[in-house]
Length: 289
Image (cartoon, rainbow, N blue to C red; front, side, top):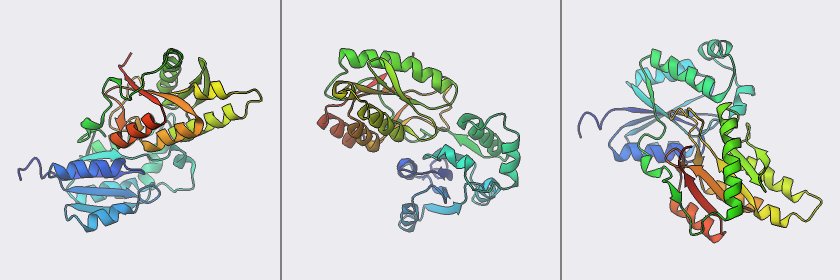
């Protein structure tokens, strides 16, 4: 094993499968991985993975313990780290108590948007000699490639929804409000805020189902558009689609999903596409506009 492959990589692990996929990919390249598991977010399965692989070390930290994160990486000789997995934005407003370093950072922020907060944390880490690298590191094969990904391409009406939705999604993403919009008949049904993509889709389905009129046609015309930010920082908050997203679309009776090519991660791609095909959902990855 050469020196480059044996470099210790820090993994700041949020929720979901993202941390595990990155962990597998880094280990496949021979990197020992030091996991900073967030007590409020990370799946305890991470401990079982470490028990069967002596190249994985896990340290559990609270979301507010920025100083302890830095001390842990210093002690483990980590010079490069990656964030993987969602940390719910609403945690910022929870009862979690920040340590002195995080409290100082929060007080100095102009806003508490995702970009502003995580960008400030990345700068603090860099000042401490820890480089935060792209969250797609080791996972580039999972990025959506341009074109229609399912058996069925978007219909004419769905393409019109996509075209309209892209404009709305780009405007929202520029303000760091959310990455996802749900469109029906070229009208915006729901926009993502703190609740996340899947909850946004569920909410759109409930809104359509609650209409007094017979909305069955409109329900099937629901189109989901997920757009990266205009200046997307690939170190964090990269758009991610997984099987849960398709399951949410099925519940909401949404029929089409558009994502941005080369800037959206597709997890469990074979299973995801199989589920979409079975539900006759069209998925397309579009180039950046």
